[in-house]
Length: 547
Image (tube, rainbow, N blue to C red; front, side):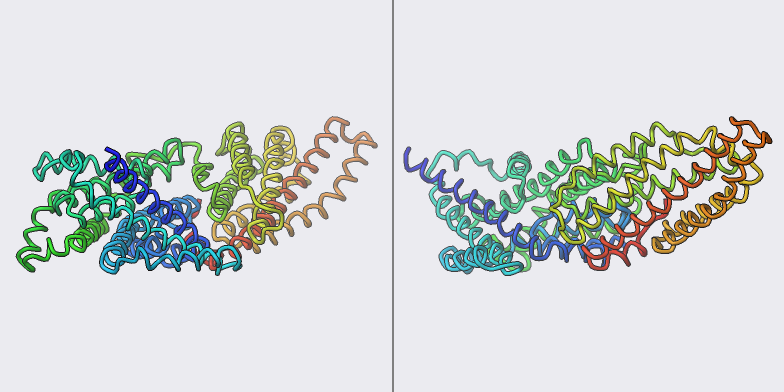
């Protein structure tokens, strides 16, 4: 009994070591190349096909499909890429995850690196403790890489003794019912461990030690491929529309791919035996990772041919919801400010466009209001709360500059909203006062151009125009203020009428000033985003979708 417990503890301990190694290695790789990979995802993603390619490479390098998927959700939410392109990235991430299986099969079993990696772990931790910047990240990745193979060695040793325990007899036989049971077990394993890589490594180890047959191992791997969607689906509950669409897409895609792969298990074994008799059983672990990669590649090829139709289906299942302004603010992005800040920037831009359209409507004819002001207040408050949850250290480079600029912009947005709430009397007075008609026309013409410039991400142009408009308005209405006061004094107009005109003048000045300050701060935030993700400024222009 004690021997059995020792074996079981060794297997679970090995699995724990593998998971620890994956976490450490992934953390080091993301520190080392995470920003580059995020920038590359946008730079090279122009359609679903290039999205699949970048998703594959990014996941293979970072060893984390979750990081790739979260980045894709953030980019589509910020308007940097379209939903079909994001689907391509997600499809490609499934191929990228198969790289771990190849590492385990080739390096863990063929080269048996379990002992050889000990010095690698030591060197990696020395770099982590005493080196700086990228070398510390390299050290962390190396240490995690080494721990992975220590875990594999422990699992391999432990599973070698499992055939003598009662657990071995509990494994379902290779039949349709047995394969379905193993499929379900694979789904459960991936859902519990939240790592398909750990599941594949465990399955490869069981196959290598002869604990299960190839067909049983294939059924488990298919189940794990499906099970990876459970965590993603749960994570999207209560999330944004884009996050829920992404989660649903992931689930449907993996279910369809898994169903196809399950039906291919027998044809695959027959094909292998026909082409290379004996290879399937002499090199079962290589054949298994080849099967894992093959059905994911086939799934991506098929999915890419129907991506646009698939995207339309998902959008019908999960339609856009009102209010539209804050749909990009996914709480899952808060831990990654470089994704959360662009989402806030796009959100504030949408809110600003809506407020500017409202201002133009009330100045020109008092009709055509396109927003509900109380609802807009709720959206602004939600945006402010979201921004308040992005925590950075003071002076943390471009990210800090972007955050501060966004805080300033939102402050002026709240005040512009207050001016909109005051519009009924003051805007009415401004548009019916002959002496202010030129100023009203100046603001409406300026706003139309500013909206166009913002949607084309010409922030410097928009900011300069807004500043020029505010300055010109100040120069033209200041003399009229004195004229109004003189008219009150001479009795040409009543105090009440004069007061209304003075309030209308102040209202026009304040509106133009807030617009000037908002565009200035949003422009500064855009420049900062271009600094903390190289190439983002250009990509914002090439990928931005008009509101």
